[in-house]
Length: 142
View (cartoon, rainbow, N blue to C red):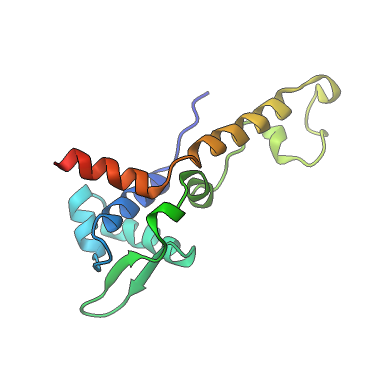
């Protein structure tokens, strides 16, 4: 089994890095789309959701665009990915409040182990922030 992030989250991370590197300047969706070779329509949906979630300020109009609404060191990757992904259910029984769908129910620790593993996964991701990603990008550009 491979756990993968969706393209939505991949694009959301790219948007955040691109916008974060601009230090408060407004950035257009067209600019981001051209930079990464991503559909402008798809990016519009991503940016809209990031705006609704409080990560981006969106400015409409001829001279509009987007910029970070929060400080990069306040955006922890684990929390961010949790908000942009829809589902982290690794096995079907993780969706259930009880063990009714587990044929092994009382004999299987997989549900608890997987839940614990996800918590550890997000705790590790939360050690990193958007500021860390921006610093890495800046160093790579030098």
